[in-house]
Amino acid sequence: MAKGKAGRAGDSTRTGARKARSPHEERGAASGKASPSASQKGDPGAADSPTTGERLRAFSFILLRAVVMLAAFVAMVSFAVFLAGLTLTPVPGAVGQTHVNLQPGWSLQLYLDFPARDALKQVGGNIVLGAPFGVLLPLIFPKLRGVFKITLLTAFVMLMVETAQGVVVLGRAFDIDDVILNTSGALLGYLLLGRRLSRALHLDPNPATAAKRDPATD
Image 1 (cartoon, rainbow, N blue to C red):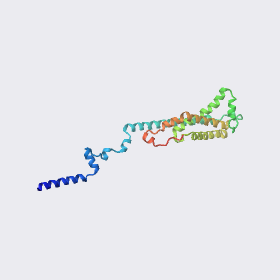
Image 2: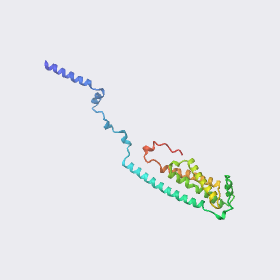
Image 3: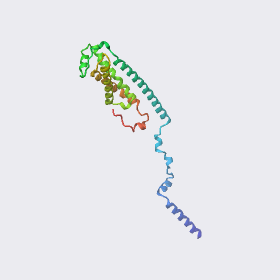
Image 4: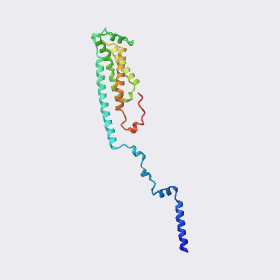
């Protein structure tokens, strides 16, 4: 009789223990599967961590970027020296034959009245002379990327060059049409080549961070 009571008491205890379990534990026990722990689920940020290969590619890209920027800087300095020699060299034989032009289009019309070869030399030469600004500046300074910035900076530099020609260089004169043609050349160089090269060179090699960056406003 005592054994029967003890047995019933034991059954009651086990029944109470089962009732004391949480619904989640009951479901886990019924399915025979344990709930995954936080460590088993894994860190959500671990998937975003770059692998060794990705780090190596990013480093190689940064190294290539540095080399290209250095080459562009050397080219820009060389071009500046060439430009100074070409535009700031005195021309004693032209004294009295050059005239200041502040009227846009006046010299351009004069150039077009020249024979085709001479007209191409004058107009094309001034356009080509401005093109390196549009190609090299965005490579060296990505923050200068943009039509307005390139146009403004090139026009300013060429205005300074033409002013120096008109004030201190013998046999030369200020010509606003040269500024316009040089600036047009820089704009063409930027639109045709400089913008694309700058975007490719200064692209973020890490896709995760590149997606968070604002697109270029150019």
